Image (cartoon, rainbow, N blue to C red; front, side, top):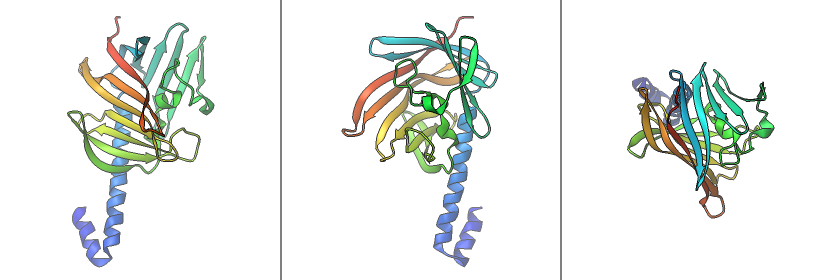
Length: 231
C-alpha cells in the first residue's frame, strides 16, 4: 500500500501523497471508533457504581445485557438504556413502566443533577463523520490513539470532540469536548482501571467542567465503579 502511494507520488505530485495519507488516516480512525463502540458490550454484567462530587454521592447500577448498557437509578426509579447500532446510538429512558426515546431537546439536561448530561451518556460523537487520527499519546501508563471529530451542524453543545482510545484494549481513556469557538468545555479522564470477571474497565473516571474564559476547572465530579453487584 505504502509502496504504491510512493510510486504515485513520482508520477503525479507530492500533494497527491499528502491527500492519500489523509484518506488512510481517516479510514483508520473510523475503524478505531467502531471498535470503541463494541468494547463495552462484553458478557452480561451488573456493577455497583456512584457519581461523587465532594461529599455528595448518587448510587446507581450499570448493567450490560442484550447488547445494551443500562444505567439504573433509585429514588425515584429510573433506567437509562444506551444501545450502539451500526449507524447511530440509541438512548432511551424507562420510568413508570414506560420506555421512551430521549428527545434531542433533553440532551443538555443533567443526569441526576450532576455534570453528566444525556448527550454525554449517548456518546453520539463515536458516530460523527470524518474523524481524524492525530497520532498516539500516553494516558497515564497506557498508549492511546488520539482522534479528533468535528461535530455536525445538528444540535449539540460541542463543536468538536477529541478522544483517546487505548491502543491494545480499545477502551475510551480520555474525552475532551470543545465548544463552537474551539474552547475546551468538558473533560472525561479515566484515572484508574480494574479487572472484573476477566474484563478490564474503569474504576474511577474524573469529569470536569471547564471555564472557557479562564481555562480552569469550574466543577468536578467522579464516576466510580465499586465492584460487581450482589446477585
